[in-house]
Amino acid sequence: ARELNINVDDPNFNKVSKLHISAIGDSVMLGAEANLKTLFTNSTFDGKVSRQIWHAPAIIDELKASNNLGDPIIIALGTNSDAFNSYKDKLLKQLDGKQIFWVTVNYSKALSINAKLFAAEQEYPNFHVIDWNSYSNGHSDYFYKDGIHLTGTGRRAYTACIYEYLYNYYKTNN
Image (tube, rainbow, N blue to C red):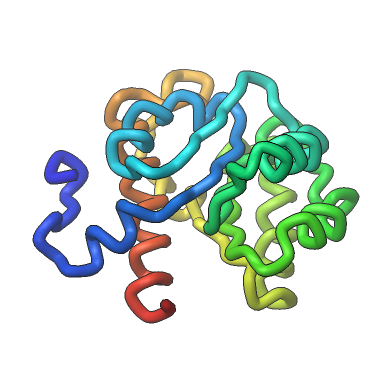
């Protein structure tokens, strides 16, 4: 945590790092999975290459069936397709009562999803946006040449970004 410039002596650090998170993502999350698992020790991170939004409902059903669906839920999907509006109602119904944190995309061809995420955040009190796009803006060192996948510095920044958004939410809620 110290390598991420996270104050482990802060009383809220344990609250946030011990959350039982269930996270579903694409290859961007997969790249940072080791960092995320080290920081969030009671959590499950499930990133997969080329994963799309339409995969999420089945994964959520599997987590529910195995009694492993945590709270909060982090979703980092949208780089490979923008089907958010098509699946939003189904996902929100499946995750009713859970806090949902959705990570924005930074890939220029997929940015249309971000506006939909911010609109959902205004509409649903349990839906929160982790704005990775703004957090990473201007940091070409976070990305390989494709502008999507994370370098070592990018993996640490991605993990810190998720932590900071969760920290800011949970220090005032719960």
